Image 1 (tube, rainbow, N blue to C red):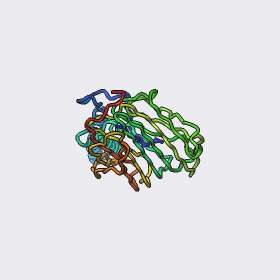
Image 2: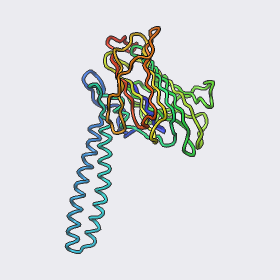
Image 3: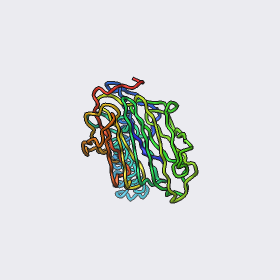
Image 4: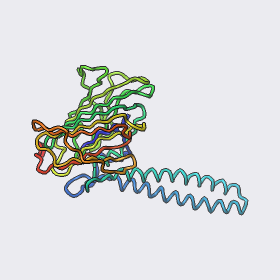
Length: 325
């Protein structure tokens, strides 16, 4: 139910378009949140398409009239309208792509946390990510996650690495058990860094982890972030997402480990969602280790698309509920 979006910078990343309310207004059957993006983004895209068509028609009429009557000013206006139609068309297409990418559904289940985060995505342009390591420990309804990102700075200066923490249910930032370490400057992990909330607090949170010292151009970094998310996982069909949003073509290596304490899931399936919002099934994940009540699933991706999401859909009938349920 949670994803980390390295966006930082802003990404996990973005984003991601920001709407005024920090919470979706509707509920789907069963109490899951329904994101408001179709009404907002579809309206923008529809109006943009109408304006584009109107500008083309009006520009054509004025151009013909101007040529017939040799009116230079009419021809000039038609040129401006044609230019406006091109700009409006580009905007309309962008909005349609945003809507498409923010309507991800897998196994008949809307991936609400990813959909909301996609609408608020912020692209990281100052940092280059080389390696990503995600570890998610699922015990009943509780989730503990550890995210580690290694890379270097390509801007003149950068002071923080941004993440996105998203869930179908809202855990207020004030109650979020979350801290980070700047591993290159603090290899002994003596200094815990409390992330800073960016913008509004809701089911999709953008947080920034400040470096202990600002990065300069070509300087490497390694950041470790830990979060405890009680009561966010459910019995039955559920999911976990790992998302990247960086202004680069690929991430050299991305490793995700899913560990289940107690009863193992019936199955775990891996889906990939690209920047266009198109989702495809990659494979069923087999367990790689089972001992002492712990089952581990491993996913390693080389040269992973830097604006994409990996969705791990799982089935756990009868999974024990946590203390929050």
